[in-house]
Length: 88
Image 1 (cartoon, rainbow, N blue to C red):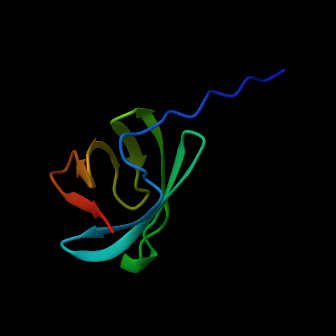
Image 2: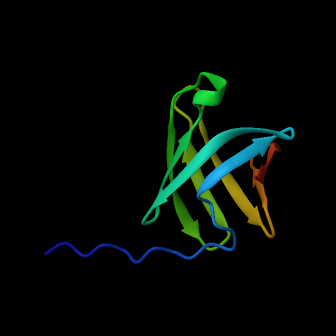
């Protein structure tokens, strides 16, 4: 029998559209603790990662590299490359 980890509740609901530079683009979907980031608005491939705790995520962008993200309520995602996304 395989036990699945309980989903980690995050301080911000990650699901939905995010904006970079005030322009909506990335769309995040969470399933359990797995994350998919649809980057098609930028003609980039989908990125995949995981929720690591209630305030932190890590995502691998296949055309770039892996980054960590810090969730700051009410609606900010601060990336380890110093970029910031805001929940739309």
